[in-house]
Image (cartoon, rainbow, N blue to C red; front, side, top):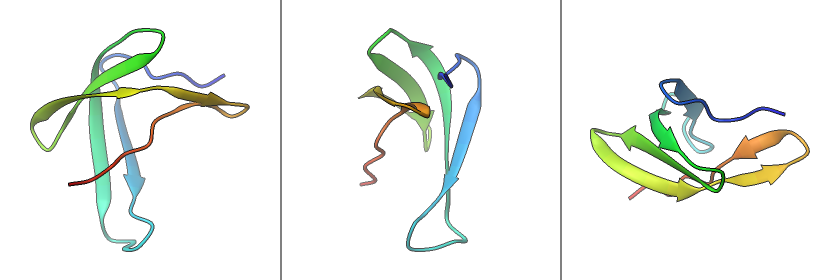
Length: 61
């Protein structure tokens, strides 16, 4: 199962704009949450799990 790893950087593309790339760097994690840097700000999200591994839903403001 894929899991978030502290110190790793993850990227994904916007569903509406292929040229827009979102990037986070994981700073810490627990079994249920992941803390990360996004656009220079520290954030935290709950981790969701399915058959493909861990993921989080990113809400952009």
